[in-house]
Image (tube, rainbow, N blue to C red):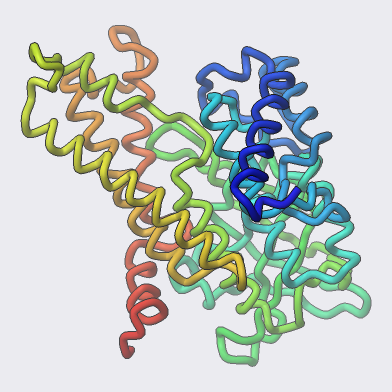
Length: 398
């Protein structure tokens, strides 16, 4: 259905609402925690039958990736129609049916650089939630200077032998496939001689070990590749041209990280401020300084959402824009500021870490405050983002 005219868009929105009302279980229209997020994959975990049913119904409707072509598991809808689906699910307070790095990062990159065989192999499984992906970029000696990576792939005829280590690999212990940067030409300049391999985490020689963070969470992992045999059919893009592919996926990642409508725990800051700070007879927060800070944070949040809409509109013709770095940088800073504001609002109630005497939400906010720091590191540090903005967006000289 086209959304080229307003009546068509209104009709489509009406159809979306009717479908959601008929198919989303009531329990999936209630707030959920990070433990309720459905990631799919071979090791998929559902907190209940309703969560499984909700994901399956959206998968069958092909609305997990609604704008993807039908041959790759999508519904073949326009970007505008896909946005309507997302808007209405959020407005009706539906839980995200499937969270997936494959949907937002690896899938679009495979769509752009993959062979037809690779697209048909991987994209429908991503759209059906059958395979969960992780990103093998950073190494112990190659973080912000990613091009210094040393994980190597040696040509062995019809396959490569891959040896090396990755670090900060999100959810590697729960994932099925690794989008992996490897060095295929050690004699080339460091930004050259890099390739991308699509590696099954179940293959012999692949292992992952969680890294415990200050927040107590362990979604980051070390990933080890010990003489892993990888068929050459798993090479994404051209040999030794992987830096171009890697940069493109980073743009998709930064667009995802800058998307204010992402899933996960989302505290109601205004409600918490009213609860902990109190209000006057006119309904205003009693603390004028915090009131001003809260207003500024909410305005920045709205500006980020609008900027995201603009960047997505600009990017539709030619892939993600370098301006996604602007969005990722600002979103990271705003996210940290938001949790600084939250623990300030909670006062001494924001000092809890574990044990009795604190509510579940108070303990969660304290841990999320610690976790929020990683947003200025993951997906490219703030310093790297500012360099990209200066060079690629503003056109400033080196």
